[in-house]
Image (tube, rainbow over all chains, first blue to last red; front, top):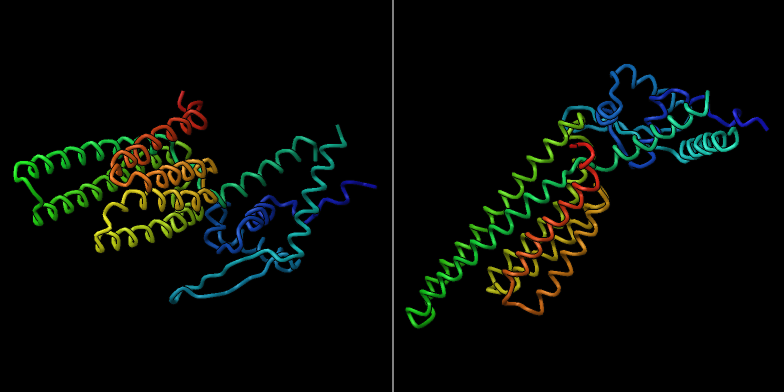
Length: 98
Length: 212
């Protein structure tokens, strides 16, 4: 078995990995909080969030606070599974390549 | 990718998870400062009580107006101590946040604040009710117990060590329930001594190396 095959291509980006890490421990996080924590620009974050959403790893909820849009993100069961698989593959590689 | 990079990735993941869910910049010195405010407050309260009893003995009996005056002074003192403790606590935590170069007011700080305020505000109204109903002797144990519960609730959103401080506050509050008229001493222990001990322990555990 090739362990590298288990590493998820989608999580190769540090920003996408960061988004998933944050959403694993927080039920729902809005766009601005993600931006602040990951220290990225709007456009950059939006494109990464899109990729994650297209792969079915994120649920997006568009809401309003007053007149301002408030978009929140949550992890889907598929996203959780993929993230855990990726972590396991990382651990496996560290253990067995020594 | 090399092993080194994989390890780095896992460290990044852990850091992100932690930073997004817990407010870890709380300074131990904040605890010490709050404790000193608590002790000073208890000392001033003792002076106020002593003066009241001197007047009581001179008069040779109870006086409604003087008792109301005593209560008012103690409530004002309590609020001042609370403000001083929060202010000095915020000072040291802000100082640490600046040193760590992270933002103070992020998601984790907001969560911590909301979750500590729910039991604390509940306790505040409960105590106001106790005073209103002249159950003054219950004020000290009630405040200790609600404060302990608030800390335990908050411990999920900050350093988990806060949980033990919360448990100690509850124990002190419960013992106080069986020594009702000694509330001031239990307050001094709960809000003064425990904070100072906790603050020093936390500073030793997390900040000592950063400062030296």
